[in-house]
Image (tube, rainbow, N blue to C red; front, side):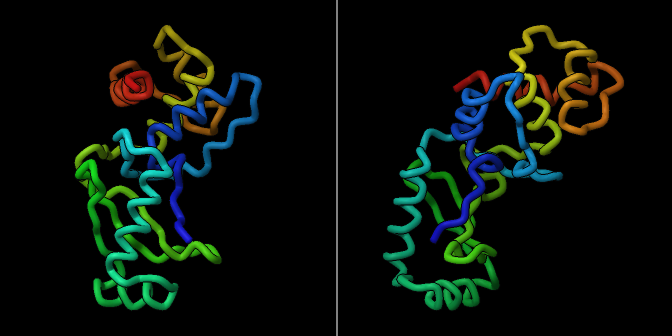
Length: 170
């Protein structure tokens, strides 16, 4: 019923993904998209997020796909809701069969950051490769392995290093 891209929007899932891959693993980061995204950095598990989402829908009297369609139409195609940790989330129409309730973190919500997909992809690859020394060569090697263009200098790597810090902080 719920469509949620965990690798794009849930920091704990990204950290699990990293833990389950090695430098020799085939790593597919295409689910991280190609643009800006909102990443939930809070402590709620996927089960908690789904449980609270379903509870909210039930409280709104939404028990079927048609109920959900009407709900979204009343809200011009999307609606927001809040979880127990005060993070805000967005309801959209899901484009997969049987997964019509599409959710993602709201922009500028508590426990949510906006991040470029290329920045996050680079940080994920650096973590998988267990890179400890950050220089243009190590960053560009990671970027090349996932089809991203190189950075020209370490001044351009500030956001990547911040993302690495985020991946290490949990």
